[in-house]
Length: 214
Image (cartoon, rainbow, N blue to C red; front, side):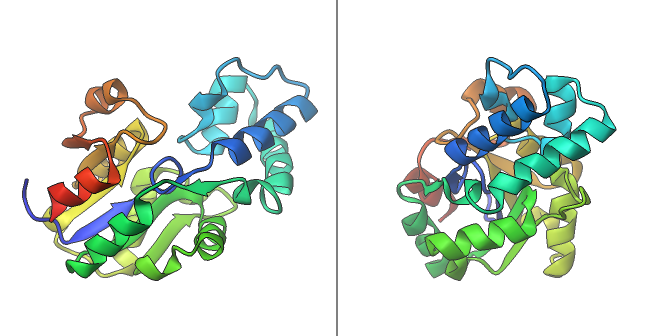
């Protein structure tokens, strides 16, 4: 494996298990909008929320805006902390930092929520920069977030940048910006999903990730 200097981490399903908070807020929003809750709510974990309400519930733009408002009403106060850091993640981040890696975050979650989560769970210290979406839907897609993070941190040599995430959106977003992607298997996505998306590398534990990159 080649040497990567800059590591961009996804958040949900990669650094923290946010399943409980997201699903409770989703069900609340979908039911209040009068739509049927899809049987498999796990498919909402990963894609931008506006895209998910459209694709999985069939909402139009006006309905999506209202569903997002209802979702965030609960998520901004309760849901974002119905969350846990995956076992081994702090140790992984510390080892990467100790070995000179530049560690950043590229998430489709609104940036202000990501910052609050890291502060609550004691992860802020590991990251040079935390980049995410805007509340108005700007930078919802992963390639937009990656471009934003690279611009803000003055990273120009993309051959030394690696995106790390658990879903197909991470792989596709990375490739769209000309960087490689390492898929991880302790999150929401499967090996099959990551392979079909074209992940350049795949690993199954935080420690095995460290072993690959150092």
